Amino acid sequence: MREKLGMAAFVLLLVVVWGGGFLWFKGGLKPDSDKKSDKTAQADAKPSESAAPSSPTAVPSAEATYAGKVSARDEKKAVDINPAAVRPKPIALPPVASFNMATFNLLGSSHSKSGGSSARFGPGVQRLNGALQILAQHQISVVGFQEFQPDQRAAFRSRAQGWEMYPGLSMGRRAGENSVAWRSDTWEMVRPGLIPIPYFHGRIRPMPYVLLRNKQTGVQAYFSTFHNPANIGGDMQRFRTEATTREIKLFNSLETQQIPQFVTGDMNERSEYFCRVTAATPLLAAAGGSNSGGCAPPKPTQIDWIFGSPGVQFKNYVIDRGPLVRRTTDHPVVVTSVTIDALKFAKSYDPTAPTGGAAVTP
Image 1: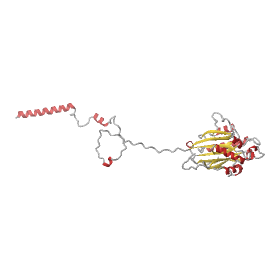
Image 2 (image 1 turned 90 degrees about the horizontal axis):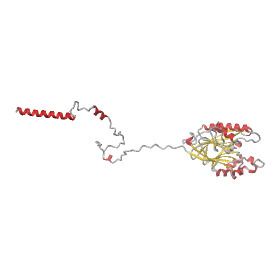
Image 3 (image 1 turned 90 degrees about the vertical axis):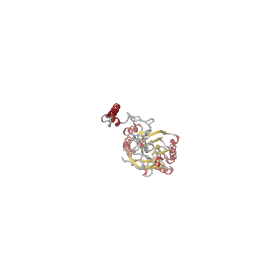
Image 4 (image 1 turned 180 degrees about the vertical axis):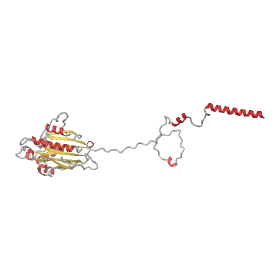
């Protein structure tokens, strides 16, 4: 019996030893084998290089299982697994205003009356109908008038339907001889202004600049008109020089407003006026020319001028000397198309106060 028990114990010992050796050989029987090795722990701590970072829109793995519960109602809900990015609200750009403008010396009635220096043209009131036709032909919406005498202004007020003017007849005989006029369906006046300018023999004439607002776009711009004295009855050069000095001061004052401006007028000077104005102000002539590295006036050079702020666009510049113009006045009518992009002028457009703004007294 003892021999059988000894044999059984031997066999059991042999099984234990053999099994332990087998486990040792396979690596399953090591000291601290219930803990992960350092390498295994580091491998588990590092994410797989091929693993995608988790995100709300990541596509789940096909092998993944979901241990939660989904209600019957939730199963019927639509799920956006790749939602589109939220688009920003569109930004409204400032508007653009385009129009035609002119400078127009009407030849005052006193010059064309019987016995006058230009009597062949006929009465100023009679010639006004021709002037209105010229404005209509060129589709003018703003014009700077010179030699606009009281009887011509009165006829304009009664015949020019849909037009307004400043000063017109509002400030007496002399103030309105230079007036800015505009189509009332296109423009409205925001603020008027006057500047004293030496005329013949230094006698002061108030000449206008006016802030207008384009009704369709809300774009605002200054318009001014001037008539500097010619050499009639003597040499008027010193008075022209002083007139130009005052005008330049006004131009520079208006430029600080960050609102576009347009200058019209019979300056009775050609290259002299162009060179002084373009040297002392940032203004550009609608006719072209330059003053960079030396003064280069446009050709042909007129005494009737249109200038504008840098940033406005001039095109289709025309010097009209056609038959109707020649019957109406002794000057050409100078016309240009204008585009104002309010994006280029910080104060030219205010959607919260479209009739805001103020004129400047230099």
